[in-house]
Length: 129
Length: 142
Image (cartoon, chains in turn brown, cyan):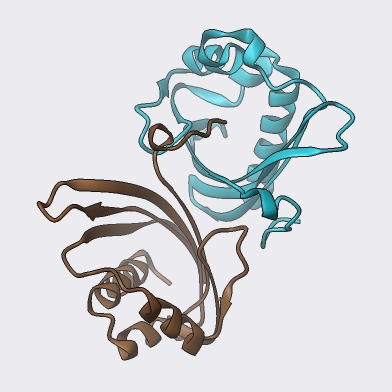
């Protein structure tokens, strides 16, 4: 994968998130993808399961904004960083998540492994360390 | 940087953390390093500021992690030119007997290195693990 390939995949991911079109979601992932919402969580396994999981509790269009870009790309691996902002009805920011995605791709450019690290800023939570 | 170079740097990072030796900490970073404990932080700028932040967390040396009460493991997930991303965990125990885990963080470090192998940009993403997942082995890191 090149950096441009990864950026295109990330843009397609955000587009699929916006449309919730099953074919667009499915096109992102390999048959046997492992998709983990946090590093400590058991992954959702398989393309169909990921599509079903995305469709289970969709975010309303207009209620969020997201942008991701590659931080590093090497062979079939990439790491993307970015933010997802969730908005109040008046358009002000409700919360922001800072994310890192660890990605591994198949030769056809579909993602076979997706491990997300996400969190809110420390000021919005009680943890430290 | 090669994966072996990055692993060696991570091992020195953990050794410096354990020793709180100012020279060992300082040797990890370039003069003009930017070090963020969280991606939204402005960050500490410069080697001396980073060493001070390590030695006196929040201005208080007693806030250091007590020897024997924690362990950590980090490995490179990707290395591309002068950039790398390391992943791993830091585990804290209630006391040095290490019989009871207090909490675990799953972390990713975004790293950028200078030509001499010192780190010039460090951004940490740390994710607190829920209490019912403290024993789970995360993927990629044993």
